[in-house]
Every structure is written in structure tokens, then in C-alpha cells.
Image (tube, rainbow, N blue to C red; front, side):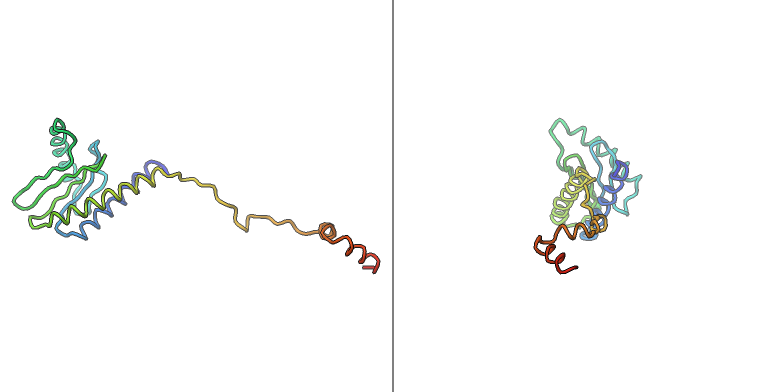
Amino acid sequence: MNGGADKELHSIVLKDALDEIINACPDIKNVFLFNKNGEVEAGNTETSPVAMIRAVTALRYIIESSESAGEVETVIVEGSEGKITLNCFGQHYLVTVTSENADIKYVNLLIRVIIPTVLRLIERFSSAPTAQPEAPSLAETQIPAQTETQAEARMEPNQAVTEEVEGK
């Protein structure tokens, strides 16, 4: 598979995982994932691409401003109608927007189990060799036709002599 196809497949897998997180926890209104370069890799169906890009721009500013305190692990912004949470998973950041009544412990449990698992699986499959030698099938294996001389060569010596004497 080429790089473009890999990237598209990764995006589909991540999008499906994000949609399933929302299905499991309807209190999550929006969720998307971007990498450390600021490229949005996937978002749920309900999140507009423009909103994701604007959020990434603002969040990257917060991340860069906070680097003096060390690597950013989590950023939470509380508003009157809910929370925006930024979680770091290696080279990726996950942004979730939850309603004010969301069960944050459940949301965090889902996110901290599902997202790292999906990212590891994608990494594992993208680094796996794609071309593997195939074993020949039975249809491809040619079995030579048996000729009379081959059959005679396989006869026991006594059997050949007996057949000659009897006139076969």
C-alpha cells in the first residue's frame, strides 16, 4: 500500500473509532484528533473541518506557550455549557467537547483505553510488511504424468521377471 492509501485508511479507522466513542457516550458532542504538526487526522461526523482547524490553531498556541512547564498531557477548558479537553497520546492530541452534565470519569476511561489502542494498531499494521510470499496452490503444482517406463521402474524385480515368463 502506498503512503496516500495508508493515510486515508488511518483516517477512516480513526473516524470510525471516534464515532463509536460518541455512540458509547452521547455526552461527547465533538471529538477530533490532530498530530503534533497540527494536521487534523480525523474527526467525528458532527464536527466541521473549519471548527477543527480553528480549534487546532488555538490549542497549538496553548501547547507551545505551556512547553516551559514540560510536556503537555491534558488541558481542560471549562465553560458554562460544557468542557473542552485536550489529551496528549504520544505524537497525537485528542480534543473532546462534552456537555456540562457529562460523566468525565467515564469519558476519560473510554478515551484513555480506545484511542491509544487504535493508534497502536494503526502503527503496528502500517509498519508490518505488506508483501508476503505465497505458497503455491495445488492447482499450480504440476504432477508429472506417469509413463510406462516409470511404472516399470517401480516394479519389484521379481514381479518383472514373473510377468516376462508368463508372457504379459
